[in-house]
Image (cartoon, rainbow, N blue to C red; front, side, top):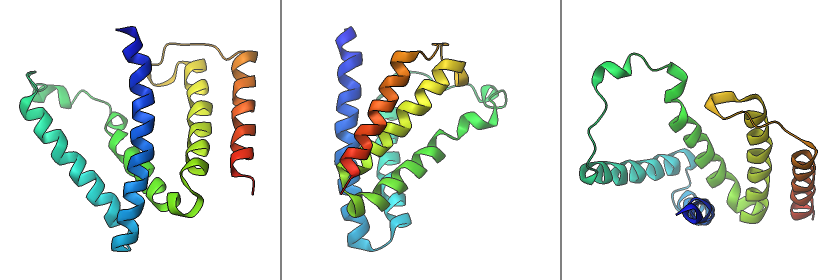
Length: 147
């Protein structure tokens, strides 16, 4: 079962790469990056509605909503930013260039979040090995993007 926790992120990475290519083609076809992002999120919303219909778990009680901090509702907004950036950039710089930069940003942010235990992360201090990993990843991003 633990292998699934390693396999699923790899599959998500593959899906993100394919998604960016599809969204980039949609952007080119309709010549409107924001509307392409809207369509992408619209189809995702429809998929989630269908999944929720078949998911056998009760929805949260309405009283719960008022106790949730406002920033916890911004995940979808950040998702809009990510989808917009990918469909805006992928056809200009290519999937490999774009994703190596995204991964460099993700890993840098992840090490900072883990180190300080931000956003409910279990504190996991940065060490020399992790810092070297970030430096190597940034060097890789440079090499992948170098013309």
